[in-house]
Structures are given as structure tokens and as C-alpha cells.
Length: 367
Image (cartoon, rainbow, N blue to C red; front, side, top):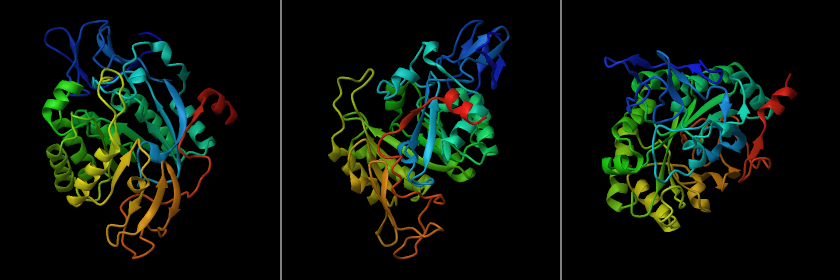
């Protein structure tokens, strides 16, 4: 086993001499020396290893709203990091330089789970987010880091496409406090042709998180012109969220920017996001947001009972908050869904942009 390898979980020996990965519905079958589609889970000898344990493509301190999570300790900061690789093949990937990387030398920041937790604590972060690429594929590293974070009173966040089998999902999300799941579209055709995956496992993950766990869950859909932004698809998607998950699950519609293998598709017009938000609200969804555009109305949390603005945002910065300490509307006393203890208003350190953090340097200061 190489120095960069860590014993992986969730695999079995197949009848044909290969080993099969049981982490996600791809069911990659590997001969010795081969890697799965995610690139980071590989066969070495008679076992499977994770090649990115303890190695990251970079760390940054961000506002929690950037994940995006608008109802999970708003106004607090989060230490964000990812590794390399991904178990989806999205043609529109907005983080393709990391998620599609095959260059392990990009993983320049080495850090143990304990170093990450200490650095987050020292930086004043309320949470650590597993993001940029998908924590599904580095679940062992994410789970160990979550344990180290919880030991120091730090929350954990998974930003994921939700494409994972039930057993590893149960174990991974047992260690998460919040999640933002990418619901990339609402047709099987889009998932198959544009992401090389399928919709049903993502729906299963969303149902599981909302109905069977205490993980605070929000959803993001990146709207791509001509691909997943028709009225019919938006009606179907938002009806499913309202009916299957409930009206209190926050839904974020984000603007697409031409990137990776979809550079010929135009950016999402702001009017498309507004239209999607209006459709979602017409289905009874209480908390619908727009992202990647400047839209204060689309950033603001309103009370579903009296329509008062309870958290006013501009980009990722909170300008005003009218919430009681128990998460109630300051005008009518109605409950606002979410986790609101530690709400920070007007924190100048965490506005629209995050800041880079060197874990090794930060960790040295905590010893």
C-alpha cells in the first residue's frame, strides 16, 4: 500500500476476480491498479484504498450562506475544504478544476482530521464543510474529520450531489449536522446525459435526510438555460419538494455560468431565477432563494406566517435580523424553520468573499 493510500470501506470481492465498490450506484468493478470513475478510490492488491485521505485541494473560511445554507446558524463562518475527483460526470461542473482533477499534486494541503478541527476552532469557525468536490467519495476522511470537529464543539456540513448507497449514506450522515444536496434537475434524461448518473438515488437521499435524520437539509438546483429550466420541469420539481419533503425545506435556485464542457451555453438570466422562485412559492414552499446573482429579495428570509422580512441579506452578508432567540419571527412570533443559535449580524469579516487558510500554518499556532 502506498503512503498516500488509506483502507477504504464499502466494497466486496466479485465472482470474476475484480472487486466492486459499494459506495455509490456506479458499482465500479476494478482489477488490481485500477481506479473507479471518481478516480480517488482504487484497488491495491486484494483491497480498496482511498488515495486522498488527509490531502486537500485547499482550505478557505467562508460565510455559511455561501454553501448555500441560509437556515443553519446564519451569519457564522465555516471552514470549507475538498479533495479531488467526483463520482458524477457533470458537463457543467462549476468546480471542474478540483472535481475533475487527475493531478494528485493539486492536493497540496495535507492535514489530519485533528488539524482541521483545531484550525477551524482557532479561526473562529462554527462549522467545517466538506465541499468543492463531493464528500461521498472521501467519506472515510470526512467522517473522521467530523468526529474531530464534534469533539471541539464544531458543526459539520456536507455539500453533496446525494448519489450514494443507503448503508454508507447512513454512516456518513450520522456524523453530519447539515447538508446541502444538489438536485441537478428533475428528469432522468438530464441526469443520464449530462451527469452520467440517475435521479432516483438523489431523491432517496433527500427523503432519507429530511424524514429519517436530524440533519438540517437545504437543496440547490443550478438552472441551465434550455436544459433544466422549463416551466414544466420547475413545476414538477417544486411540487415534488413540497409534497415529498415538505414546505419548510429551503430551496436555492442558482445561476449557471458557462464552464467546463458547457461553454457554449449562455449564463442564466436573472429573470429565470425569479420565475423559478415564483413557481416554487406558488407550490407552497416557504423558503426559496436565488444564488450567484445580486438579488436582495432572493437572498432574504421571510416569515411564512406574516411575510415579514426576518433575515435581510445582501449577497452572503446579513444586514438585519428580526428573530427571537428561539427562531421566532420578530413581528408575529411564528416559527422560522432552521438552526438559529449563534446568529451573527453584520460580521464584517465574512462578507461576499471568503479567505484562504493554510491549515499547516494555522495548526502550528494552536499547539
